[in-house]
Image 1 (tube, helix red, strand yellow):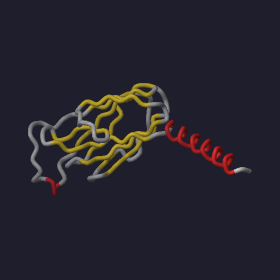
Image 2: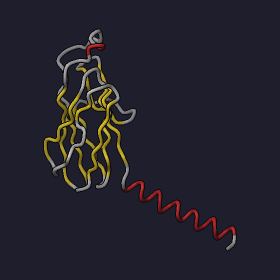
Image 3: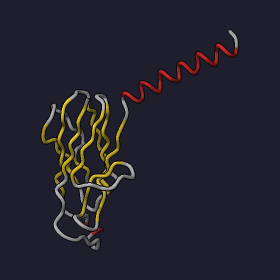
Length: 138
């Protein structure tokens, strides 16, 4: 087999792998600490939001990471029924993931706990936010 043909076959195989990865991609949503309102959703480096709406393809996984000063329990409010494995994010950097296999509109919130004892000195302004996440799956 010629080197040129080998390179072409290797490139074609790489394209197939990339296409499969895109179909089953992961979006990370961080619960980030805020001075006003305590916590908000944040995707990547985007501005944090109390109410966040996303559109993703079926097969996408959502990874939730808790970087707030208090624990959070992820709650599915509506949408195609999901099984939430380890929804209690009871420490800093705790995470959970869920795969959105079916098209539909999924709605999530969290139930926040009390501040971690070692974070009592962290001050916030106003009432804690009640976060809402809407995910449209195509």
